[in-house]
Image (cartoon, rainbow, N blue to C red):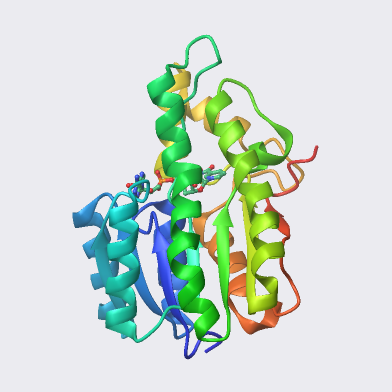
Length: 252
Ligand code: NAD
């Protein structure tokens, strides 16, 4: 049990990476608040954790809205007695260029992918600081580090996630709060499968391209979850401000 005495909030906890991470955190002993726009799916993940003997609650929320974030933080603290781990993972993608992107879509992507992290930190940092510290992990993306095609708002938002992670680490390190980003490559989730259907006549061929990297396959959600468990745990006690890349070697 590497996460005994940890209480965690996981946003996007009903999706591919968020579900796997909620389950992995709980399996290591953390109490987990599974937060998602999809209330039924979040409830199902929390139930799955409880059925396995873990501790979990589900909270339906839109992470881009400050009132929702305040409610999430208050509910998790009331339920668990504190929160010392946050995985800011909820995210959306729009596969469009600058020419095709509307201002509304741009703002929505930034609301869900970037403003959510600012809002969560605004409300969780005072709680973590008062308790002596904590670990915040933000989901960036390989495309937040190197860019990518036909996803301008997404690439810009994930670049912001990587750099705001560093800025948060600088601001709140003295309070004992570590802040890191985990940056996946292509991972086998609903998001990637939706993209394949949207962008290609042959979704299987699209997904096969995701395997074009040194480890010759796309990632599985549990492989991202394992990195988050480590960053959440005290094993990574001297790691902050880092951008951990988990992508099967997507540099090639
Ligand atoms: P997913 O679509 O399976 O899960 C995302 C979850 O976030 C969904 O359950 C969705 O309901 C939830 N969500 C969306 N908007 C929300 C909102 N406003 N408030 C609360 N919840 C909201 O996707 P995933 O692949 O598991 O993605 C998780 C994270 O990983 C995202 O930030 C994504 O950008 C990032 N990522 C994914 C990949 C990949 O290949 N799958 C690669 C790099 C980065």
